[in-house]
Amino acid sequence: MKKKLLELEKNALKALEIADDPSELEKIRVTYLGKKGQLTSIMKNVGELPKSERPEAGKLANIIKSNISKGFEEARDRIVIGKGDQAAFLDVTLPGREPLRGHLHPITLVIKEMCQIFARMGFTVVKGPNVELDYYNFEALNFPKDHPARDMQDTLYVSENVVLRTHTSNMQVRIMEAQKPPLSVIAPGKVYRRDSDVSHTPMFHQLEGFLVDKDVSFGDLKGTLTSFAHQMFGRGTALRFRPSFFPFTEPSAEVDIQCVLCGGKGCRTCSHTGWLEILGSGMIDPEVFRFVGYDPEVYSGFAFGMGFERIAMLKYGIDDIQLFFKNDMRFLRQF
Ligand code: PHE
Image (tube, rainbow, N blue to C red; front, side, top):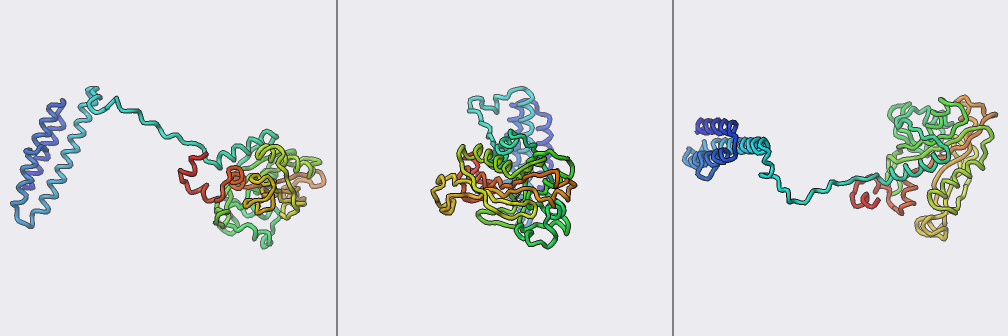
């Protein structure tokens, strides 16, 4: 029976290969695969074989059936398409399939919007490495090894001197090292910290901004950030500067905006304070200028850093940061 089956397969495939019109094809189909076809009649005999041989014969017959069916489909495609007779398988009356249209991720939208705001104020956009030397992420920003300020940024280490950058402030050092003032730069990008809950993800996005020139004052920092907040959250949005500490700025300030949800009256989002913290900032510390070879007696500058996710959450009223990275279409479709 095995021999018979293999023979039948060979004949069928050969016939399919040389067939060149639809009616011939149909004849072949009936001969081999039809209800009264050759394969069917051999398969009927499987039941008469000794019990031990039945499974193997049945299996082979099935494989051969599927091989012939495949050969039949190939021959049909070849003949029908070859003759330009597409109507045979293409129903031109069916409505068209609308291609799925994608759109930008909410974080990408906010990155673009914020970069545009600062670009209009004259800032140049730069990008830098996510895998960074300890030197650029910490050391040259005036975080000595073992300094407690490092504890604020739970760091993912690649090796002893290489980290996944914990903030975009590494770009202050990289750019200042390579260029002379005056300069005004923003550096958007991914940053990493070992943290995960409703307000933290191990990877998130920051925007670093800094400006260095002669006679730059804290007033310039305030003016720049106020203009940004007005463009991003609406004219008249109030800002509040609170004294803070960063090793690479002195003085340092954390900046709050008037709560965008309650207008400063106090609500759940702002913990009933009327204010929302959005960024860290300050005047670049003379120590950082020494690391990059600028004369702190001649130059001064300001720097600020903020998280895009935080801004996006406030702008769109989102209460769980994890939503940005779950790829749930019901969430993403809303932007
Ligand atoms: N890099 C700081 C942070 O991630 C923010 C910052 C940037 C503060 C620039 C001051 C100046 O917390």
